[in-house]
Length: 174
Image (cartoon, rainbow, N blue to C red; front, side, top):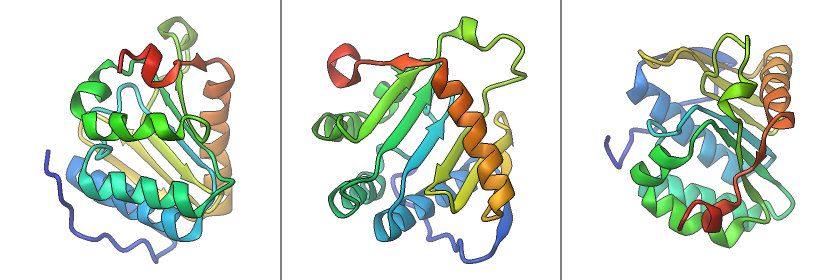
């Protein structure tokens, strides 16, 4: 995984994501947008291992978001945080300072039931949704459509309601 990314333009209304490198670029662009324009963030993935969380630019974007968007909250939901801790130690050193705003949640495997998968999703402030339909290949899309953003927010929210607090850095052993 690279620690840098080319800038990705999110000015259109929607687009396709074709592979994990492009997913990482789109996510980085969304985090930069969050830092500039604010808003709540909802993120879900089984492990977050393929996300660019620990990249220096990502940690800076998260920090900028936390400092400039004083009331906004971020809700990150995983099935298991172990792989993310290993892949993104820089982010997990940053996050404990912001546990009151950056909430790590865990959804037990038994809660998945017949959900038909637990694909990567990110929703930004009711204005942007990113998702992967094919997590193995990193293929999906992004949209600013209010209906799609609402649908993706509802998917993450439904999972968050069945989740529990991961305990943050202390419970994660950091």
